[in-house]
Image 1: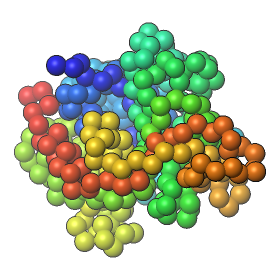
Image 2: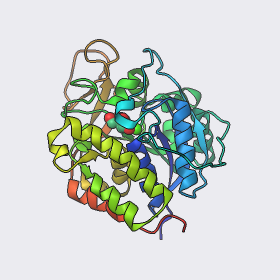
Image 3: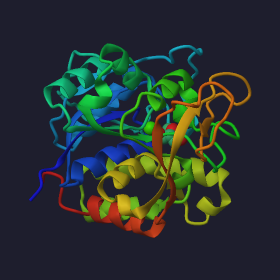
Image 4: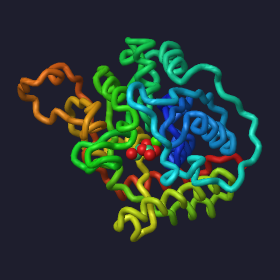
Length: 327
Ligand code: BDR
Ligand code: CA
């Protein structure tokens, strides 16, 4: 038997982040060795609080760190409470007391320390704005050699953006950090809106999970997804038909464990960092000469372009219906 993949989960929980975290904690092939948090769907303080809470109520002990609070260059914006709730988890009516505490290191320092301690063993799955990863690269320029691979929920190539016609939220939130990450030269996979908008998860699935395994963690997830599904159903008529939502972040983990469900195209990615296209992930899709500077040495990113949606739904359901929570 092969041992589970060691993963650092860089996240801004966030409802789909919570879904992704529980999928990862449930999956026997994934060993979550740390959770690094960032601003994004909520402030970084709230993101860290939520990561601590989600792990504690699921009975799991995982180090959690607090990371960057703002973008590198552009001014920060108010978090999108209308998508994830003001608390990031669909406005939970109450929380039980928990005692787990933050690891005192910054998220970037934790990433660097873990990568140095386990060279070539750690996969980094990042599903929020990319400031922690960008700062870790500045602290340790050889990070691309120390990490096994990096998988991002970020960006889009052909699918319209969700913040502007061309920008996906995680990239939009810190385009300079994203451009740095896409240019760094690791084994890098982008799981963006091209595939995450193909996989619609019905709210009914999360009710089924909560009914099947009565537990505070499944209740919290069901409550959070209910708020999130109302948002998505309010703006996408085809999502409203099943009262569902996009799973965005969980697709990064499904890619990790079931890459055969995705069709990949390889090419360099750069990010627009100003103007009307701010946050656009632009892909070099043909290996031909372009006279504009900035493209010649861009390392290849594996970009997920198509996905087997039904199979992803089935993988998610199987994992979250499994017996992964303490009685
Ligand atoms: C991404 O933005 C956030 O709102 C979600 O958590 C996801 O990571 C989708 O564009
Ligand atoms: Ca996220």
